[in-house]
Image (cartoon, rainbow, N blue to C red; front, side, top):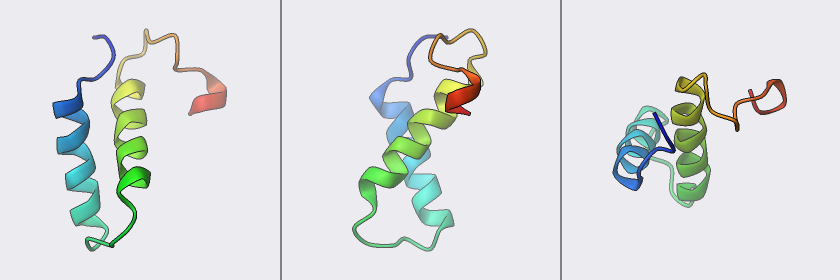
Length: 53
């Protein structure tokens, strides 16, 4: 699995946003969290290091 595509990140970010009570003004936070979660699913990702976990 390579880098997550925008559609995957958007879907995960939306789910996280809903789970956290749909707070306003935190779009970037949920986007980055979703992107990192998806990257961490790929254990072979060069971006997945102990420092980024």
